[in-house]
Amino acid sequence: MLKKLHYLDYYLLVPYLLLCATGVVMVYSASAYYTQVRFGANQTTYMLKQLIFVALGLVLVALFYYFRLSVLRDWRFQLVANVALFGSLAYLILRGILHPTSAVNGASAWIDAGPISIQPTEFAKLVMIIYLAHMFTMRQDQMRRIDFRLRDMRKPLIFVLFLIVLVLVEPDTGGAMILTGIAAVMLIASGIPKRYGFGFAGIMAVVLGGGYYAASHLTFPASWLKHYQLRRVVAAFHPFEWVKLEGNQVVNSLLAIDHGGLTGVGLGMSSQKLGFLPEPYTDFILAVIAEELGLIGAALVIGGIFFLIMRCYLVGVRSKNNFHALMAYGIATMMLIQTIFNVGAVSGMIPVTGVTLPFISYGGSSMLVLSASVGIMLNISASERKAKEKAGIAHA
Image 1 (cartoon, rainbow, N blue to C red):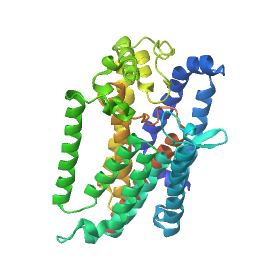
Image 2 (tube, one colour):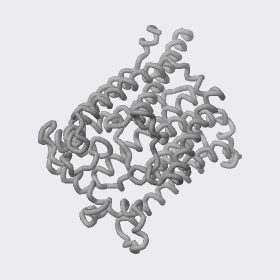
Image 3 (tube, rainbow, N blue to C red):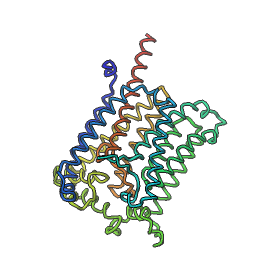
C-alpha cells in the first residue's frame, strides 16, 4: 500500500486539495448571512456540511486510488451500479408524477436520505463513463473496422439514450446535456471511423450554433414563453429585460462581477449575497468569488479547475490501456462541461442550467462523485507510470 504512494500524481492531487479548501472557505463566505437570515441557523451550517463532504471525498479518493480498476469492468459491479442508477431515476420520476409538490426548483432530482439529499444525476455521469469505457474497450477492434456501422453499437447507445431521457424527464436539462456531451466525446475518442467523428462534431456545432442564434436574435410567441426552460434561455441573452423573472439571477451575478472589479471588495464583503443572489453558495458561488476576490481571484479558481482538467486529458493521452484512456477522457469532459456551463451562466453567456462549479459549489453528491473521479484518475496515472517503469526495466 505504501509502495503505491511512490506513483502518486501530485499534479492531480494538489489542485484537487487546493480547490476543495477554497470551496469550503467560499461556501462559508457565501452562505453565512443567507443561513442566519433565512433559517435562523448557525452561520457555519453549510460550511460544516461541506467539510464533511470534503472529508468523505478524501476517503473516496484513497479508496479508488487503491482500488483495482479491473473490478469496474466486472459484470457484477456493472449490474449493481446500473440497477441502482436506473432504479433511483425511475423513483424520482414516479415521485414527481405522484407528488408534484416534492419538486425543488421545478425538478424532482433529489432523494432525501436522513440529513442529506442524494442527486442520482451526479452519480449517473460517473456510472455512464465507466460503462461506456468498458463497452467501447470490448468492441475496440470492431469499432475500428472500415465496415463499422453505428447499429453495431446498439446496446451502449440505447443505454445512453435511455439514461438521458430519464434525466431529461426529471426535468434536469443541464444534467442531460452534460451526459450527452460526455457520451459524444467518448464515442469520438473510442476509435470509430473519422466520418462518424466529424459527423457528430458537425451536427453538434449546427445545433448549438442554431440554438444560440435563435435565442439571442429571434422573438418567440408569448405562448411559447409559458415554459420556464425557454424563458431561462431567452433571459440569458436579455437578462435586464427579464430582471423581475428569470433574468434576476444573471443580473445580480453581473452586478457582483462588476462590483468586484479586478481585485475584489475583500473576503466576506460581498453585497450581492445579502439576499439578492438566491442560494449564492451553490450555482452562483463564482459570482461571490468575483465580487470578493475580484477577477484575479475568480481567474485563479477557474485556472485551477482547468489545470486539473487538462491533466486528466494528458493522463488519458499517455495511457496505453484503452479502458483507462476512455475513462480519463470521460472524467475530464465531465469536469470541463460542468465548468463551462457554470461559468457561462454566471457571466450571462449561456442559460442558467443549475450546474454547480466543480469542487467549489456546495453539494454532497457532486463532491463525492468528483472525488471518486479524482481517485480513479490518480489510480490510472499510477498504473500507467508503474507499467512504464516495468517496461523500462524489462527493456534494460
